[in-house]
Length: 183
Image 1 (cartoon, helix red, strand yellow):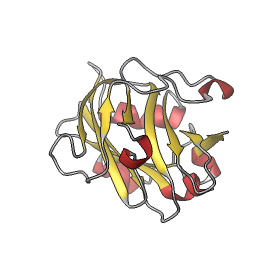
Image 2 (image 1 turned 90 degrees about the vertical axis):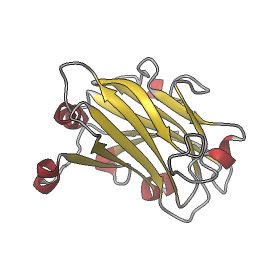
Image 3 (image 1 turned 60 degrees about the vertical axis):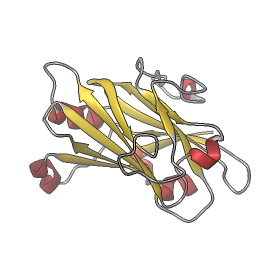
């Protein structure tokens, strides 16, 4: 329930129609940390940058992620959903050791910047999120009870008409219609 209530991701167009930025937030006050982020399929080509303290482009002290790898290399328990969650090559990032300290804690955020595959656009990503052709997974740890959880967005992503006109999409892991919880 904490993950459902506190974790969100905003998808915004980058500096061109062939770029996208995903900003992950832990907005609540309950103890937790998003420690790994995974992308399954879709039209994302590659990660071009992370906005965190390593990049020196804003971010927050204490949020420290590395792109292109994660441990484990696939979403924990991602094989328990249908279809299985399979991370696309290189489309993942996780917090550096110590993982809970450098993860996305309450009140913190991380932006992952992407190039979109040739011939595809930001609008294709919006459609893929709606159809389930692009899925986003997060692994969160360090809850007060010591537990961890994996979350995946669902195929149904309502995007208000005003957001379509602005060329942006908004996802949230809150609410049963937008996520699946994997224990």
